[in-house]
Length: 575
Image 1 (tube, rainbow, N blue to C red):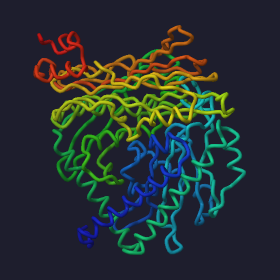
Image 2 (cartoon, rainbow, N blue to C red; image 1 turned 180 degrees about the vertical axis):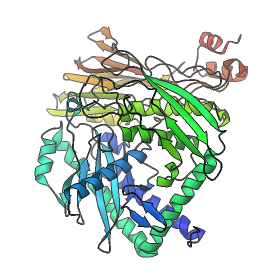
Image 3 (tube, rainbow, N blue to C red; image 1 turned 90 degrees about the vertical axis):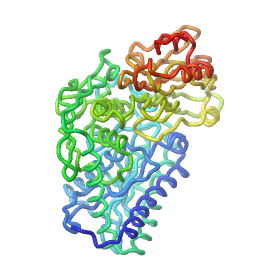
Image 4 (cartoon, rainbow, N blue to C red; image 1 turned 60 degrees about the vertical axis):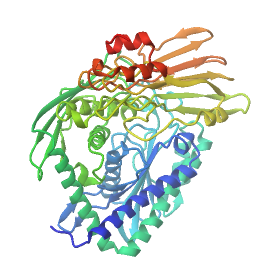
C-alpha cells in the first residue's frame, strides 16, 4: 500500500510524536525528587497503540508508536508488554476507562523488569474516544524487600525483592487513590520522599496528553493514524534492508553471568542467530534454548526483558533505523522456556534488567561479529554497577537509600578505540554527580578516577572503566550490590583481548573484605569510617593487539593508561 501522506508531512508527524515523548521525559526529570531519576536519568516515556484496525493493518494493543530519545533503550520493548498487560487486565475485569485514569504496575511477570522499575500507564482520549496509551517507567530507589534499594543479591523468591504491584488504578478520573497509595507507602523505605516521584511521573503523562492533543488538533486524528501505520511499514522495510546486508547463515555466540548470587557458578547465555531472506523479507531468528536452566538467585530474566535486550542489541548494530513496533517485526525470538531467560513466578529477578539484559546483548554482538565484523565492536563493560547503601543519618535523623550507577569502557571497533566511562549498554543513565550524593547522604567520595589498565588490548583498544571509593562518614549503614564481569572480562573481537574485570573491596575497620561472588553481595554492615572500593570493567579490544601502532601505545603509556610493562605484555611488542 502506498501512503497518501506526502513525505514532508510524514516527517513532521514523526518528529512531533518523538517530541511529545521527549517533553514527557524532561517533565519527569525536572519534577522528580529522587537523584536516580532527576540526575541519573533512569526513566523513559512512550506512546503505545490502542489496538484495532488501522488502514490495512491489524494492530495489537500496546504496540510501540514512539519513544523519547532521552529514555532508556531497554524500556523500548518492556513497556510494550506492560501496556499490553494493562489492556488485558481491563478486558478481563471489564474495567471502565475514564479520562484521568492512571494504572500503576511493576509486576515483572506482566511485562516488567525488576520491581524498582515502576510503570505508569494512562489511556489517552481524543474527542471523547480512546486514541492511544501513554506510559512511562521510573526507577524508584526502593520498593521494599530484603535490602535498601532493592538489589538483593541473595533472594530466592520474588517476595523477598519488594512490593509487587499488578495493574491497578492509582489515579481514578484524575484523583489520586489514597488507599492504594497508603498500601504502597507502607511497604517501602523513605516513603515520605516517594510522593514527589509519583506526582512527577503522573505530571509527565499529563504533559504528554497536552502535547499529543495539540499535534492531533493540527493534523487530525485520521491523518496521524495513517502516518503511524506508514511509519511502522517503513521501519520494518528499513530493518529488513539492514538485515539483508548480513550473509545468510547461522551465527553463534555466548556470554556468561558471573553467578546468580546464591550458587557461585556462572550462568551461560547461548545465542544462535539465523539470518535468512532478501531485501524485502530478510529476518533474524534468535534461539537461546541452550542457555542455563532457571537459577536460584535473582539473575533470572523475565521474557519482556529478554526480548527487549535483543531489540536494543540489534538497534545498537543498526542505529539509524527509527524506533517503533515495525522496527522489530523482522526479528523472530523463540521464547527460551526452561532457561533462566524466561523467569516465571516466583523466581527472583532483581538483576534481570540491569545485568542479564546486557549479557544477552553481548551474546548478540559476539554472534553477529562473526558475520559483519566491520559493523560491530568488541563487548562494552556491560554492567550498570548497581550499588545500594541504606541507613539513617544521625545528624538529621532521616533514613536514606543511596543508589549508585557507574559507567565503564566501551569496546574497540574498526572506527577507533572504545570510549571510557560510558553509560551501560541498556541505556543513557549516568552516575549521579558525586557532589549531589555527598550533599544528600552521609558519605564522602575519596576517589573517582579512570580504571587505568582496564581497556582490552587490540589494534583498537577498549575504553577504560572507573575507580571510586566511598567512605561512610557517620551512622551505621548496609550495602548491597548487583554487578557483573567480576569473573570474566568483556569479550574482545577479531583477536582482541578481554577488558578488565569488575572489582569490589570493602575495608571494614581496616580489615579487607571481598565478596565471595566477586560482583554480588548484600546486607554488608558498615560503620563510620568504613570504605567501599569499586573498579568497573573496561571494554574489549578489537583486532590483534600486535597490530596496534607503536605511536598509539606510547601515547597510552604517556597518558598513564597502561604502565610500560603492561603495554609490552598485552600488546606483545618491544618498547
